[in-house]
Length: 140
Image (cartoon, rainbow, N blue to C red; front, side, top):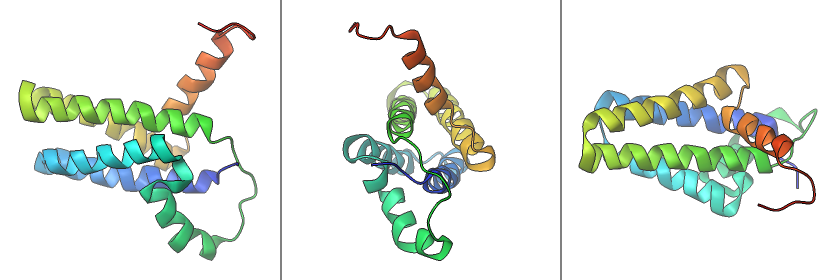
């Protein structure tokens, strides 16, 4: 089932706000919550993630149907990339050093901001590039 790209930008905007708060406060707990949101999007799909459900219940009914839809696989992959950065950030804040937490969170924030502000999903682009580089009919 296709997804509404406006929902992905909404989720990126919320993620941007959450990650900015993490950087401002240094809160590992808030980063852990965002990591759980990323994990839910990977496990259940972006439509059934917390931000996806919030968009579907509160925002989309006011906007009407989307002019176009997109494949959910690239945004789901992007959420997995976000999860990796959030987990690295958590490791930094809780065990290795604040510098690692700040750096990983800042990279995730940059990616979320680019998606929210400009519709440029870096994780989606990575997914598409990997698909182009993988020969058809051959499994790794």
